[in-house]
Length: 44
Image 1: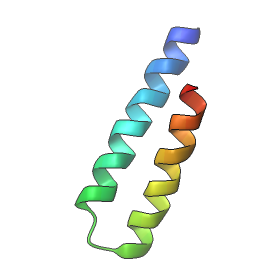
Image 2: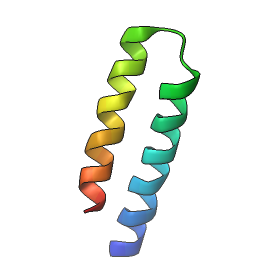
Image 3: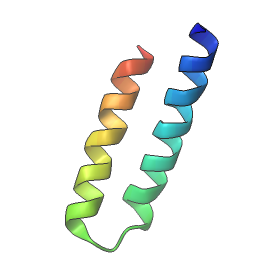
Image 4: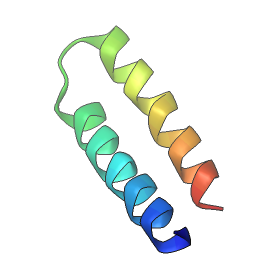
């Protein structure tokens, strides 16, 4: 169970970080940045 949560949060982190870099919309990029931060916090 712990490994599944770790993998899930890792995938969310990688995906949202990619959207931060790839998004041309500033609001969407900032939202995905916060998703990235919270998913990294969940990993710890």
